Image (tube, rainbow, N blue to C red):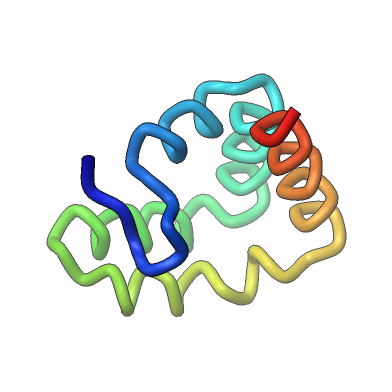
Length: 78
């Protein structure tokens, strides 16, 4: 299983993305930042993960997104 530098596997990412909190987060990101999210997804699909991460960094810093990410972390560790 492939893991990134934070020891986070693709299976972990899929599990989080499929959770209720993950679905809510994706809906929020798409509603508020649809063009930016699509650009980041295109960059990731092309293998440019560094640029995709940079594209997402601003929208992921919002307090609402951070709260959802924390909820996902708790679900994943719970």
